[in-house]
Length: 348
Image (cartoon, rainbow, N blue to C red; front, side, top):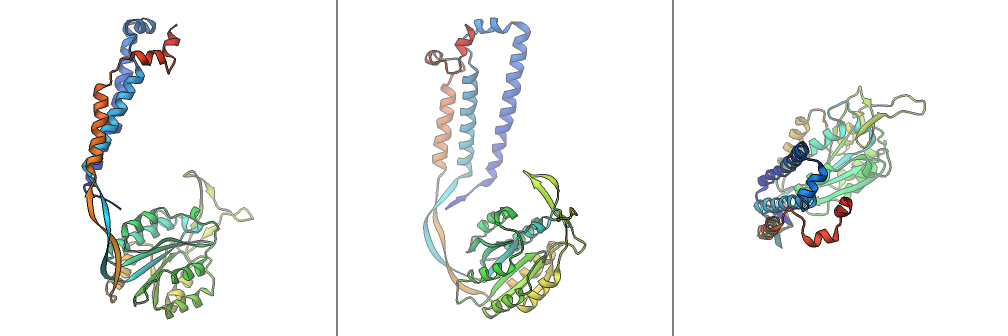
């Protein structure tokens, strides 16, 4: 497991594209200036050992050297041991609807991105609580098993999208059944399931499954995103919008938030329905509830004894810089004989 000590130094990598642009501008200026004073064939005779390849190679060595030196400043550290630590907290599982209707843009930027924002901000406010993430549409999948690694939760959450689910629809029942397997600590008395959805296409039997979760001590809170007025579902290919989803009659499909079923699920499971169109509202309500819940002690494993790794990157960076210093712009004799780029043949 790696840890970054000084991530701020990553900003120094911005010098690399600047150096590339400067190199290209200088190279273009040199070529343009040379053409003003002499013919290209004459220039080749006057400076037969000039090598564009070697010049580019020197730049590559320099850039690699700078890159590894910057990484050494960042100082990655590697955990060498796993230790068991005791923490206090609750178990919070998020069930995120990633069906196509969640791409509707009736709230900015769209329903799915708004849902991710809500989950991320809730996770940011959790202490040592364990979190898990489920995604569902026509099927349900475990995106992240329950863990205390909140950074991993953020990373997996950002990648959640409708393409990760093989079939479309809204399998809330499957998500609820899958959530049952997440709460693996029998001593945990406070278990929370946060369902974030537009409520569209949920089945009526969902309430019965929610009630069965209540018997297992799970409190379900639902967050509704989208507007009752609704909006069309955009279709995109490689990030470019090509139109809106249409029905069999060729009419544009309008998807609307259905808060009724989300309200009923929450009522069945001793929870609450929260409007999610304004990010701050569900974040505050849910984090307040979790913060006031009784915390249970549990054991978890985490890496310890992190050791510095900067010396390896420093050595590699210096190696590339030394190569750059001893690498000349001119062609070497053996390279002229090999003639990899047919430079000599072109002159004949």
